Image 1 (cartoon, one colour):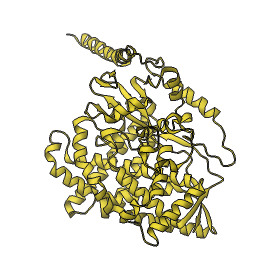
Image 2 (cartoon, helix red, strand yellow):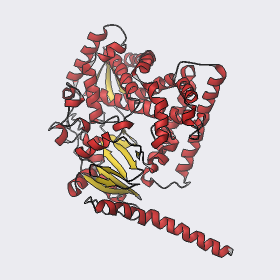
Image 3 (cartoon, rainbow, N blue to C red):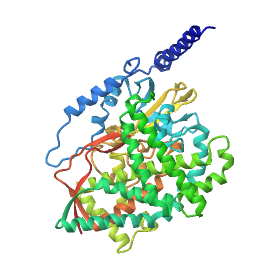
Image 4 (cartoon, rainbow, N blue to C red):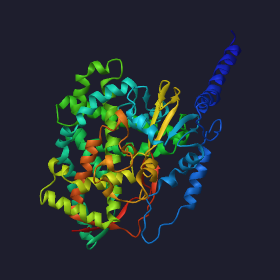
Length: 508
């Protein structure tokens, strides 16, 4: 075969692959759902429904009601994800849509959600494209892996984040929060008794401080460099998400890959320092011991260093970003609902007196817990649950073909008036007075920590940290909304405030 023939054959193979990826496979997946009566908007052969999604978002943003007299609307999902409501009304509560070449089933039917929550086989995992996209940010560890790899990681990691282990971290949470309290007290005093503080920035540093100390003990200052670099990766990745499934060496991707190598190098150095200088009682030590104790689980799967690096990334990103964002939203809601702020403060003072909170005290803070639950209902850190069928599976009578993605819109489901009542868009922690079971028409409508067997293993540490931070801050300061505050929820991998959470802070 001549060189020309080899080039022609190679080009034809490449062309067939492109046709399969762009046309044949997407059409085949959609056809299998169409035959079962599931429809959706017609996609562009390359961009899918991306252009229509962007157009609807632009219209919703332009037409959004301006807030008046300090009123803050919590019905932001209809602005950020208007295509869900439009297509649900048009095609039903379960419909097809495409982002690029990726085909997905949007599930807003509560009966289908129930079945997905109860589904335990390993053939429903993280979407392959999403795992690949998130690899620089999360690696391939417990949050982003699937199948037997995910199961191995969970067996090692989950026991280290059980409530009895988290209880041992409360004192370092208190110490880190007290540093922020001292800083705010000094600022308030300098400003004459009242300061305007962008609380999300300081809470982000606080949560990073907690996780760095929990992970790396005495080496936490070195570990803080990782948070800065992870944030840089997150910002860069949010600009290329529209091209999910396409990974070309463009400038942004090259920057992401460079930062990823730098993060890996920092964590490797911390691992080496630990091995050279002995044990500490922290998460890094637990990961090292877990990797050694379960070496048979990791065999032929991943190296010890890769296991530790990727799970450190998972703990860092999931542990500090989600907690700090939720704490910020919680303070915003309490600042705009003074009666609830007073109720939580009174409860904390009654339970703790002048003492710092401990595990027993935290369990007694029912009002604070209700406020946190309502905050995570209105402002869940993650907007979607994403899954992919790695084999043909049957869910609630629907045959979902291998390769089909599944999305559950957490934010939309948690503000659905059919599930939560006429006050679904209002801040009402009282709805959780009898627990999650009775808060909505169906408890499965509340999924801020994910669903099913893949529910977030870090929920105990997140809940404990939120209670510690909020209980301490509320006994020291009074919060109200700044006149300069601009309510601007935005979806940048997580649901956060685009312009920050600016509050007026007064020392009590």
